[in-house]
Image (cartoon, rainbow, N blue to C red; front, side):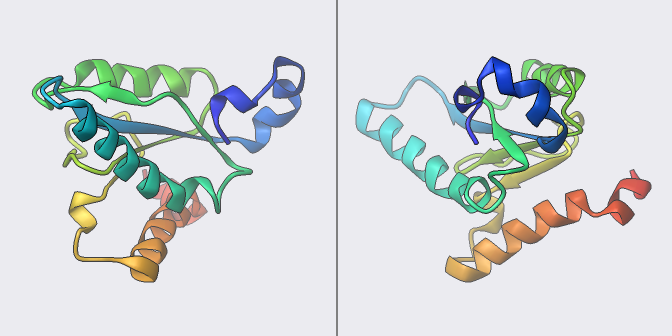
Length: 145
């Protein structure tokens, strides 16, 4: 579910069910021409579909963090921390074109990078992504944190 699909009147009732926030990371540099920017957004959209569609009732997608040269991700890390401060238990970051490391975003609970999973395609990729989300929600995983 996208953040814009939630109305104020129903949020109090729905909030307990939505414990996970998805923040897309495009990683644009500003040097892309319009076609390249469009292609980057389409790759990210397609990758996000692997999570947004099957987990629609538990996850809310926030606006994308579009630009970043991956040199200093402190602002992005702060955003992850702030989102948790609004009541989300988990923050998942997804990127189609960038490699993000856990040590760069310690406030994110899970980083899914299409580049890191590049060898996987189709059903294998879908299963791997969904398994990582399920592992995040697994109570045994939470006690190890």
